[in-house]
Amino acid sequence: MSRDVELSPAANPLTTAGSTVIGTYADDDRCTVAIVAMETPLAARVAGALALVTPRRIEERLVSGGLWGQQFDDISEVFNILGVLFNADGAPHVRLSTVYETLRTFPPMEVVGWLASDLPRVDVDASVKGYGGGTMAVVVGGA
Image (tube, rainbow, N blue to C red; front, side):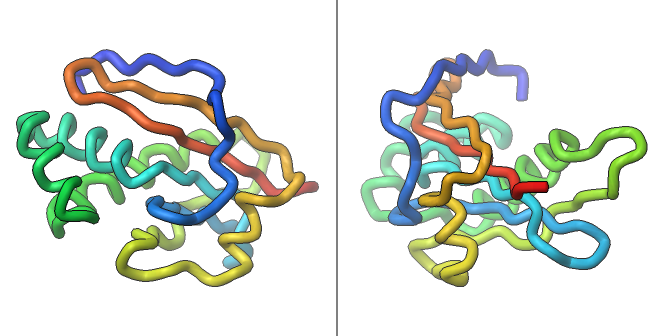
Protein backbone atom coordinates (compact mmCIF):
# COMPACT_ATOMS: atom_id res chain seq x y z
CA MET A 1 0.00 0.00 0.00
CA SER A 2 3.09 2.20 0.48
CA ARG A 3 1.40 4.14 3.27
CA ASP A 4 2.27 3.90 6.94
CA VAL A 5 -0.48 2.41 9.07
CA GLU A 6 -0.55 3.02 12.80
CA LEU A 7 -2.37 0.61 15.12
CA SER A 8 -3.30 1.15 18.75
CA PRO A 9 -5.69 -0.60 21.12
CA ALA A 10 -9.23 0.47 20.27
CA ALA A 11 -10.77 3.12 22.48
CA ASN A 12 -14.15 1.46 21.86
CA PRO A 13 -14.40 -2.15 20.66
CA LEU A 14 -16.36 -2.74 17.47
CA THR A 15 -19.36 -4.67 18.81
CA THR A 16 -22.17 -3.88 16.36
CA ALA A 17 -22.44 -4.37 12.61
CA GLY A 18 -23.84 -0.87 11.96
CA SER A 19 -21.85 0.76 9.16
CA THR A 20 -19.13 -1.85 8.71
CA VAL A 21 -17.47 -4.06 6.18
CA ILE A 22 -17.12 -7.63 7.45
CA GLY A 23 -15.04 -10.43 5.99
CA THR A 24 -15.79 -13.99 7.03
CA TYR A 25 -13.16 -16.70 6.90
CA ALA A 26 -13.96 -20.39 6.55
CA ASP A 27 -12.16 -23.69 6.87
CA ASP A 28 -12.28 -26.56 4.36
CA ASP A 29 -15.65 -27.62 5.78
CA ARG A 30 -16.98 -24.12 4.99
CA CYS A 31 -17.48 -23.36 8.67
CA THR A 32 -16.83 -19.78 9.72
CA VAL A 33 -13.74 -19.73 11.91
CA ALA A 34 -12.96 -15.99 12.03
CA ILE A 35 -14.17 -12.57 11.01
CA VAL A 36 -12.50 -9.24 10.38
CA ALA A 37 -14.70 -6.16 10.64
CA MET A 38 -13.84 -2.56 9.78
CA GLU A 39 -15.90 0.54 10.18
CA THR A 40 -16.96 1.61 6.69
CA PRO A 41 -14.88 4.84 6.82
CA LEU A 42 -11.74 2.83 7.65
CA ALA A 43 -12.49 0.35 4.86
CA ALA A 44 -12.96 3.23 2.40
CA ARG A 45 -9.71 4.86 3.50
CA VAL A 46 -7.69 1.63 3.28
CA ALA A 47 -9.15 0.86 -0.16
CA GLY A 48 -8.50 4.45 -1.27
CA ALA A 49 -4.89 4.35 -0.13
CA LEU A 50 -4.40 1.05 -1.94
CA ALA A 51 -5.85 2.43 -5.18
CA LEU A 52 -4.17 5.86 -4.77
CA VAL A 53 -7.50 7.70 -4.70
CA THR A 54 -7.11 11.14 -3.15
CA PRO A 55 -8.16 11.46 0.50
CA ARG A 56 -10.48 14.32 -0.46
CA ARG A 57 -12.35 12.09 -2.93
CA ILE A 58 -12.68 9.37 -0.28
CA GLU A 59 -14.14 11.82 2.26
CA GLU A 60 -16.57 13.22 -0.35
CA ARG A 61 -17.77 9.72 -1.11
CA LEU A 62 -18.17 8.86 2.58
CA VAL A 63 -20.61 11.76 2.97
CA SER A 64 -22.88 10.12 0.38
CA GLY A 65 -22.50 6.76 2.17
CA GLY A 66 -21.02 3.41 1.43
CA LEU A 67 -18.30 2.20 -0.88
CA TRP A 68 -18.40 2.39 -4.65
CA GLY A 69 -17.86 -0.78 -6.69
CA GLN A 70 -14.10 -0.52 -7.19
CA GLN A 71 -13.57 0.36 -3.53
CA PHE A 72 -15.51 -2.75 -2.52
CA ASP A 73 -13.29 -4.83 -4.82
CA ASP A 74 -10.15 -3.21 -3.35
CA ILE A 75 -11.14 -3.76 0.28
CA SER A 76 -12.19 -7.32 -0.56
CA GLU A 77 -8.63 -7.91 -1.78
CA VAL A 78 -7.30 -6.50 1.50
CA PHE A 79 -9.56 -8.92 3.40
CA ASN A 80 -8.27 -11.74 1.19
CA ILE A 81 -4.68 -10.85 2.07
CA LEU A 82 -5.58 -10.65 5.78
CA GLY A 83 -6.51 -14.33 5.53
CA VAL A 84 -2.84 -15.20 6.04
CA LEU A 85 -3.33 -14.18 9.67
CA PHE A 86 -5.40 -17.32 10.22
CA ASN A 87 -3.12 -19.86 8.54
CA ALA A 88 -0.28 -21.69 10.24
CA ASP A 89 1.84 -24.73 9.45
CA GLY A 90 0.00 -27.90 10.35
CA ALA A 91 -3.31 -26.12 10.93
CA PRO A 92 -6.38 -26.45 8.70
CA HIS A 93 -6.37 -24.02 5.76
CA VAL A 94 -8.57 -20.95 6.19
CA ARG A 95 -9.69 -18.71 3.36
CA LEU A 96 -11.83 -15.63 2.83
CA SER A 97 -15.41 -16.75 2.38
CA THR A 98 -17.64 -13.67 2.04
CA VAL A 99 -17.32 -9.90 2.37
CA TYR A 100 -20.37 -7.91 3.48
CA GLU A 101 -20.81 -4.16 3.24
CA THR A 102 -23.55 -3.80 5.83
CA LEU A 103 -25.00 -0.64 4.27
CA ARG A 104 -25.83 -2.72 1.16
CA THR A 105 -26.04 -6.37 2.24
CA PHE A 106 -26.55 -7.10 5.90
CA PRO A 107 -24.77 -10.26 6.98
CA PRO A 108 -26.53 -13.22 8.58
CA MET A 109 -27.22 -12.81 12.30
CA GLU A 110 -24.70 -15.58 13.03
CA VAL A 111 -21.96 -13.34 11.59
CA VAL A 112 -23.24 -10.23 13.39
CA GLY A 113 -23.27 -12.20 16.64
CA TRP A 114 -19.51 -12.70 16.43
CA LEU A 115 -18.98 -8.97 17.05
CA ALA A 116 -20.90 -9.05 20.34
CA SER A 117 -19.56 -12.43 21.43
CA ASP A 118 -17.01 -13.38 24.07
CA LEU A 119 -14.84 -15.11 21.46
CA PRO A 120 -11.11 -14.26 21.41
CA ARG A 121 -10.60 -10.94 19.65
CA VAL A 122 -8.37 -7.98 19.02
CA ASP A 123 -9.85 -4.50 18.49
CA VAL A 124 -7.60 -1.76 17.14
CA ASP A 125 -7.85 1.81 16.01
CA ALA A 126 -6.05 1.96 12.68
CA SER A 127 -4.90 5.10 10.92
CA VAL A 128 -3.58 5.25 7.36
CA LYS A 129 -1.12 8.14 6.98
CA GLY A 130 -2.71 10.92 4.97
CA TYR A 131 -6.12 9.20 4.84
CA GLY A 132 -7.45 8.90 8.39
CA GLY A 133 -8.65 5.92 10.29
CA GLY A 134 -11.26 3.99 12.18
CA THR A 135 -11.78 0.86 14.23
CA MET A 136 -11.16 -2.73 13.19
CA ALA A 137 -11.90 -6.01 14.97
CA VAL A 138 -10.45 -9.48 14.44
CA VAL A 139 -12.54 -12.21 16.06
CA VAL A 140 -11.62 -15.89 16.00
CA GLY A 141 -13.76 -18.92 16.80
CA GLY A 142 -13.16 -21.00 19.86
CA ALA A 143 -11.32 -24.29 19.56
